[in-house]
Structure formats: C-alpha cells, structure tokens
Length: 456
Image (cartoon, rainbow, N blue to C red; front, side):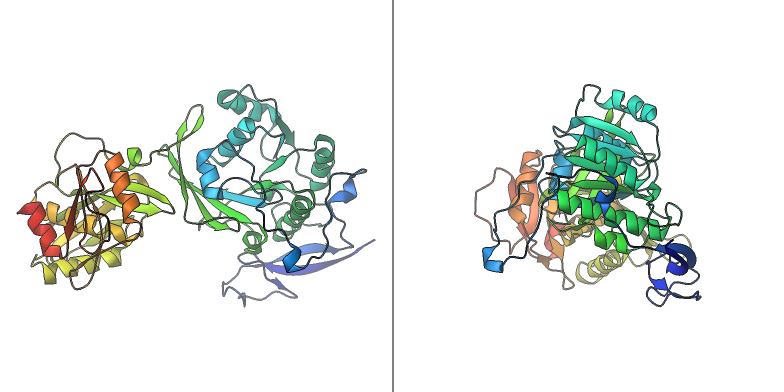
C-alpha cells in the first residue's frame, strides 16, 4: 500500500507547500492555497496499462550537436488554413497543443470539425459529451468521415488502452480538466490530476511521435484553469476568442515552440460549423454606401498577414465640463497622446471635447501604424467632413507631429490595392519604388500636411 499524504497547492500558479498559508509566495495571491490528497507511489508510464507496445514507441539516444540532423520534420496538414497559419504550417509530430476559450465559444466544434476533415486516423476523446451527442453534431459538420473515432472516457489508463488498439495518428482530448489518473487520489480537475494527466500525455506524445491536442477551460479572469505550469508543459497554447452573441471567432497563439505567436486565424460560426474567413477585411470594414464622418480605414499587420480595419471616432462637446476619453480596441493612453499632438502641432482645440474611439469587428490592435487613421477619424468627426471611403492610412505619429514610417509597408500597400482602394497615405520617409503600384501612394511628412490634404 503506497503512502498517502496531504499537500497544499496554489490554485493560481500551482506552487506546492508543506502546510497551509494565507498568501502564495510565488504569485502573491491571497487565499488560493488548497489542500489535496496525493498518493506518493512509484509512478508508471503511460504504457503500464497496455500489453503490447512493439513498433509504437521510438527510442532516443544522446547525440553530438554536430551529428543532429537539421532537416525540418514534416508537419501534418490539418486541412484548415487558418489553424495551419496559427500553428506555423501544421501539426508537429509528437507535439502537445492546448486550446483554451470561454464556454460555448466553439472549441469542441472546431476540433471535431478538424478531426472529421483530417486524412489521418484520429481519436477524439470526450469526457463531457456522449457518443450520441457528438454524432449529432458530426452529422451537421461532415457526415462522410471514416477516419475519426469517438471515445467517451475520462480515465487515462483506459484511454491509452484504446490508443493501443486503434493506433491513431492524432489524439484530441476534450477536455483536460475531465481526465483523471489512478496514480493520483485527488478528484478530476484538481491541480494534481491536471499535472499528472498532462505529464502522461506528454510522455505518450514524445515517445510515439503522435500529436495531442487538449481543450482547456478558462477561469473568469480569462486564464486557462489549472496550474500555470500546464502552459509551460505544452508546446503550443492557442486561445479561441470571440463574443457568443456574434458569429466571428478569433484564434491566437499565446505560445508556440514551432512558429510565430503573432499570427491570427478568423472563423465565422455557422449552422454547419466554423467557416474559415480568408479575407478578414470583409468583417472588419462596414458595408455601407453612405458617406459618414468620423470613420477611416487603416492597414495593420497580424504576424505576416495584412488586415484592413475600420476606425470610428466621435467628437462632441463635453456636457459636464470634464471631457471623456474612451477607447474600445485601442490603447486609451495612446489616444490621449495623439489628441495632445493635434492640440499642440495642428492647432485643433480638443481639450474641452469628449472623444470616443472604436475599432470595428471586436478586435484589439496595438500596431502603431493605425495612428494616422485614428487622427483622420478624430479630425473627420470634429469638423463633420467624411473621409474618402476609397482612401486608407498606414503611418505612425510622433510627438513632434511628424508622420513616421512603419514596417512592411509594401505588403500593406498591396493589400489595399487588392481590396480596391484608390489611394493610401503613408510617411514621406518610406523607401518604396516609384510608380510600382496601381494605387495612388500619397506621402506626407507632418500632421498638418494630412489635414491640408483631407480637408483643404
């Protein structure tokens, strides 16, 4: 009989303590340390529940750095362009990917849709839904799939036994908080169980070169539930964002050992599943024929992907004497800085006016290249003169009122040209070839040059 003892864990960061205390020394949070019963036994690996593993595992031996092959390992195509982009080209064999998101946002739908479309043998393990419930959803998404196996199980030892029988190419777990292992005597979803079950899945993935995708619940603060060490253990952390009241979803990479973390995937929720949005500008730019003041189109970059977004501004007289500064999707401190530049360098008296700013589409942008579009939208609302709908902006504003160049300006210009814009305003100091684009490229050096060009 293995010895059983009590330990204490911080629910926020997962730090272990020998006795209870009020504040966690690691994360400085109060009243997050809880007691758990942990079995200190000789831990067996994931193969302990199987009888035959011949040909399933691969061995590793120490090699000199000079002897290690630098050839990149072939990635597995998920047949989903947006997910491939965020992952960096596809799933890496032996990797562990964690997908987090709010309840009802579409995490299970996304992974079920991918598992049904994959040309590889996939084992979809669900601890939250029955096989009949998953079948009903699968019939709406992709009823002809014959490579996807559905398993409803929460015990890791039983899961590995079925893995031995099916020998899938990809394993999907929905969700990690529902799994439990016989090696730990705490309940499913506790810090000990999450850490132990994830460790078993990591050993399985690395030894068999089988990619594993986990779904993780998030807390009310927006963090993935469980110990913070969970995000350190996995190779990739993806976040599925969006508003359940809207149809669009955004997939971001918060951590990626095999690619960039600045890529963005956009989906539209439909009755038949999630549709990939290959042209994000269609959801980020309003479809209206009227000339409206206070709107301007900016070009921004999400990783290697150029996006056209609409900036909306409303400038009105302060009713209560103290002007308000409110921003949605844009840093309000940077908005205050741009208003100060307009006051000082361009002569606009905005100190006694309310200014409200919004980035349409429900996304947050921190690219300084949208500064010029923010300025154009604010000035357009202030003088109540609309900006030409066929014009867009790509430049940063400095404190001296100068219009500064931004990176990857060629990609921004080509994206604006492809979407049918007739002119783009950029910095005078951008180094681009002359007469190389069909779009009219307007170069300016100061903020007052922009004002003169827009409003005469």
